[in-house]
Length: 315
Image: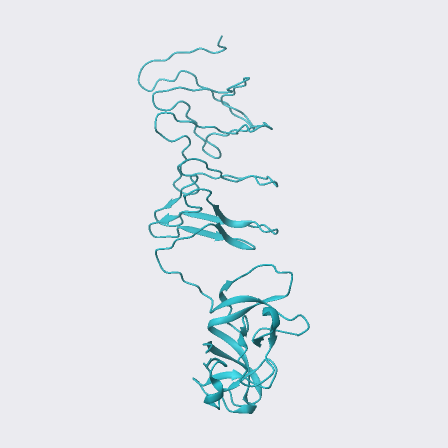
């Protein structure tokens, strides 16, 4: 039985129309046990025009998985499509604190983003407990996160802790550009020593590192990364071992503590461990240098103790 049953024929005809004016007024309102409002048409089943706010608004109070707006196409088209000339085509917001998504996609392709002039997929997180800007995981042979853009960014993520997290292999066909300087690896550090960035470190027992203490030490491992304007571009073996860990620069540019008491340092000079704890010095005896070289000086240093940029090149 129908409360309203109207037929209309002819070009531009309208079967049912509703117009309302005034605050919080509604043009057409439907309330039912199943579908509040149902429309079927050769072109648009239901068409709504909003001049100052929502064209179509859907609200659900379901606690078992019901949706505010549901779209389904069984003939090969798109279930839900959004188009905008000035802002978001589709926007999703959630106040969930238990893992709900602003936008969720599941299918042969979960979520796909194609940016013709800007970002294909953009993710931003304001989480303070580890939420990622972009998180991708694949449990079969697919891709965790895939982004394609003609002129902008394929995938962009900005988060408090992780901009993006990938579980599984990542294949890149282009260059990887890291804005920071050195390639470092985390090592366990002796917790009884005061170790700061720029300190020259040597191997101890069971892989624990200590500040260097003697000249031409063959146990030299590298320099603690992060001093001055150079920060690690990549950090390997970043894991929780229950001990104090610091990134040790193994390759690239890093600021290093040096002592000029054992000879003025010039650009290009080879550097090795010195008797001054945690400091490097100029190599003055090539016969002793083999296996103890830290790298090359990138700036001169001629007096006292200080910090200079060096090019890590252990040998």
